Image 1 (tube, protein in one colour):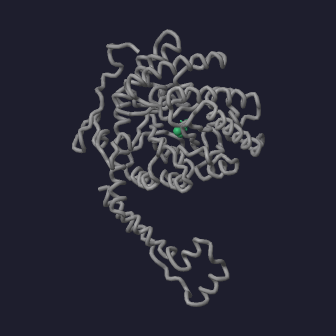
Image 2 (spheres, helix red, strand yellow; image 1 turned 45 degrees about the vertical axis):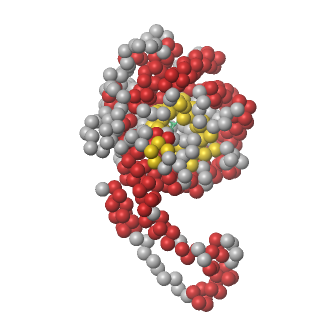
Image 3 (tube, protein in one colour; image 1 turned 90 degrees about the vertical axis):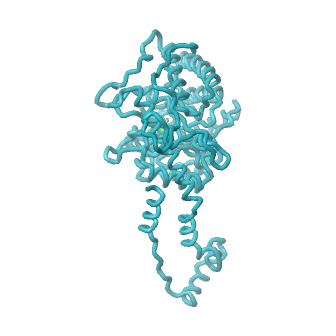
Length: 441
Ligand code: XLS
Ligand code: NI
Ligand code: NI
């Protein structure tokens, strides 16, 4: 960390200029210090920058190398380049006014020839990050281990058919958890990129799921050992890179956790693009997690329905985000989670300025959605509509159904007797969609 050096970015710190502003480098809706219900917007949103995209993304795709080149990437040895890169990253976090960041072990520190060397590299960079966190006040939302890039994990990490690879993954997660504790991380994430299969012809599905559960139990035990008090999060995704991933979506994640007695220890990190890949809406995944009291954090991004893979774009769809935000606020917020921009620049967006524009647009869209969702909930029209729709369960035999006090025989008697045929009632979807638009335009 050198003092008084030239900044890495010529772009100034992002300022709030209000909704009338047309400055692409200023916030129109995200005013971090604005207060809502006794908390600042910064405290409500808990925005986080994903190190892997913002500082390791080059725009590479399966058809060619990345055209995004940053000046600080050239240097002597990989560890000193990693330190300079991290200096640039913390300058960015500060200028973009994100209070949090998130990392994979291998994004921040280069992998060595042996695990011992990788561990040494990681320790050196974690020490550097600790100083930068102290100097800037930026905090760690979550840490995780990259158990998917290295070819050793090609057939999975904890679900690998080879116990040797399982052991290696365990050793790697042990260190990543220690790094997360060292940096005061508030959560630890498991995204099982290769924890699935390409073909059932070579796969013992039951054994692999048992192994994944054993691995997660080891993490829970180790957290106690090292005093990690943060929240464990599962990040579901249905596929990519595997054809089938075991943490397919929130619902299958809940079933998995309950099957293996892990539900007390895990919540969900929901990613918009993963939800749509699973054939769900973002809001659906939030509602399913909230109904199990397992809503943990958000990987904030968007997919492109015409492309059909995890394109990790910045989300500027205020309607989608407003619906999501209504569900998040109704669930009581994200607790120790936050909105982590697991989003990357398009391959063609090669300017350093684009990194600012992208995050500013994303933060603004979420902030606007937050404000609109608050108004929607304050007015309570949708909630009232839904409450009325289920009102028949609030008293009489409806209440007894919910309390499990009646059975088929009693209900049959009622229907044959005074109840007779139910009277259909409109679902009023079009009315509700139009009502939603009155808040958006
Ligand atoms: C990939 C995932 C990944 C996780 C962290 O699709 O979104 O980036 O968030 O391992
Ligand atoms: Ni993600
Ligand atoms: Ni993803």
